Structure formats: C-alpha cells, structure tokens
Image (cartoon, rainbow, N blue to C red):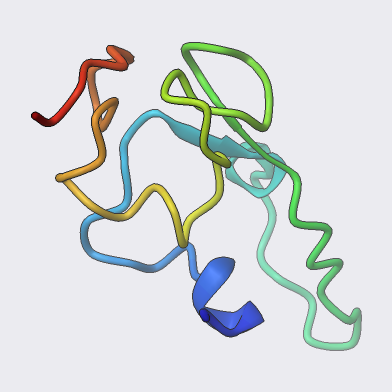
Length: 80
C-alpha cells in the first residue's frame, strides 16, 4: 500500500503529462508561513474528472507509470 506522500508526490520523474492539479496554475512563490493545502484534487485532461480513461484514479501515485494503459494517450487499451 502506498503512503499518502507517495500517492500525492507531484515531483515523480515519470508523472503523466496529462495529469492536472490546481497548483499548476498559480504564478506565485510558495509562502512558507502558509501551510500547504494538500487538497489532493487531481484530474485527467482527457476525462476532466478524478478518474482516468482506464477507470483508475487520476492522482500522482497512479499516474506515474508509463505502463498504465492510458499513460500520455488517453486511450484505455488493454495491456494484454
């Protein structure tokens, strides 16, 4: 089972380029006096929901594997 830190790590080197989160759209430096929200609101550009095209969660811990069927393509094809 993945820890919360692993599930929400947006600095993963293989993070799918189609994953989005609110923090991507802020043009401000982080204020260290304000605690992070860690709201965990992520979505896929293809479905525009928190569920990816393959039916799994759209969050960094799930969207950081090029072996996921929809990784970078939005296609939910089978890996068989």
